Image (cartoon, rainbow, N blue to C red; front, side):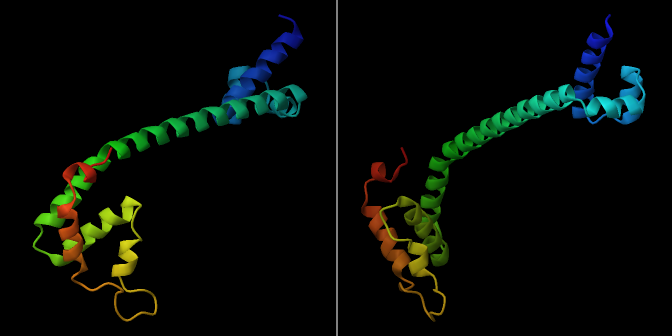
Length: 156
């Protein structure tokens, strides 16, 4: 094998071994070259170009995996939304705790998009001494939601 071809393959393999975080001793043994030769190879334009390409490919792979993982997570969350809303509605209508009913009503309305952020109105604002809505507002919200047809409260 000509010397240039052998050097080319060793530089390619050096890039791969560097990506695998192999030690200088491991690289030296596998490539059958001395550590000083490894240092020289790492300074060559060919090594630097191959390393840059390998880094770009690794970046693409990582970004692709992140994108895929994000899509899977979004799908899982999206699939859980209807059940979560049903749970909130059940707690809101069946709980013995007025505080829990109010919190569930706020959670539902805060996510609807047609209402002002209810939790901000019902909770004490910075500097205020009392909520902007009375405590019995939860009962009013629950009564109003009971009047809404069930099909209009479901998530599509």
